[in-house]
Amino acid sequence: MSQAQARPRSGIRHFTLNSDGKPHPLLNIATAYTVVAGLASFVVGMMSVQHLAGTILGVTGFVIGLGAQMLSATRAERIFIVFGIVASFVGMGLGFAHGGFS
Image (cartoon, rainbow, N blue to C red):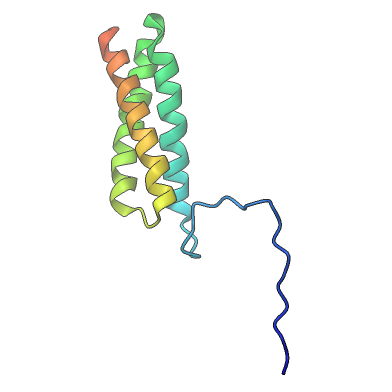
């Protein structure tokens, strides 16, 4: 009778948005853009001088995030997309409060 040998597990966990084992390159790009645009619009939206850039980044991050949310396949993608949507929405609101597209 052969006994199964347990493999030692490393303490390092590999982070991936594709937890289902399938590649989603377009969704990963949309997720990354949503998070980056959301954080950038939040930071830029706080500056009243750069309200146009904050508004544009916020609107594009919000719209791309909503589209990516409808197509997302894994939980990890959804978590990051929602974080980016919220940050984009706040940055967009700050941009509109300081002057919007004008």
